[in-house]
Image: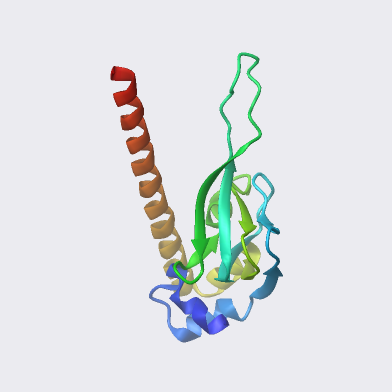
Length: 168
């Protein structure tokens, strides 16, 4: 199972020996169907890799929905992902966020196996081997940038659709 982790984008351009620096420090966790893996808003201290299973990612609605300016506590489903179709890594935003808060909730849609490595261990490995650290940080910045571009495109489509509705 740990051998499959070298196919995750965070490990692009790392040798097998360099990947082993990380995989040797992973803890494997099992989450049952409908069990929460990550709670939005809680402090994050690790990266998670979904090795096997299906998950749903949700975010709380944050817009006031009435004149009393009360927030809506419902959640918006962002996506369902299956480990057979996607290499799913979770927690990269909390790694760089000043408050280390998780920005979405993740729940298991079926029994899942998840590999976890702490931020502390990631930085320790990167500090002890600057070349590996450079590769990991470059890969993480590319992953976050790609996700940001995808989010921007979704916002653009949404605002365009909204604008067309208003113009009618």
